[in-house]
Length: 84
Figure 1 (spheres, rainbow, N blue to C red):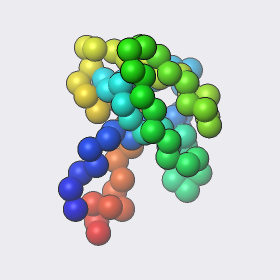
Figure 2 (cartoon, rainbow, N blue to C red):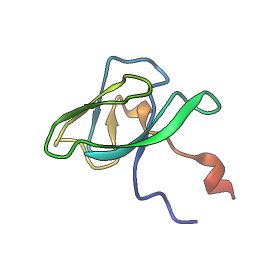
Figure 3 (cartoon, rainbow, N blue to C red):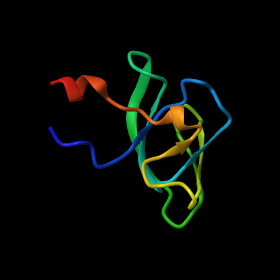
Figure 4 (spheres, rainbow, N blue to C red):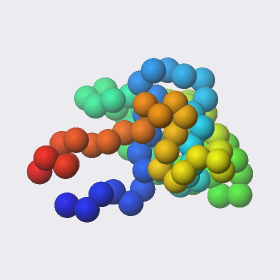
């Protein structure tokens, strides 16, 4: 199975802001099994967006590589799909 093209981020730690290196991504809220519906967020020309489910504020940081975040632990890696 190919890696997902759209990065997925979570806020299990409950941080107030997650800096991301992508303007288009999925928010999953908390880690599974306590995640919310995986929603696609697109900042467009803006530099911030708030997830409508979990109210996490995501802020674009052009210094970060695409698919990365700060804190780095907020990037979700679906280990189950890699094992399949």
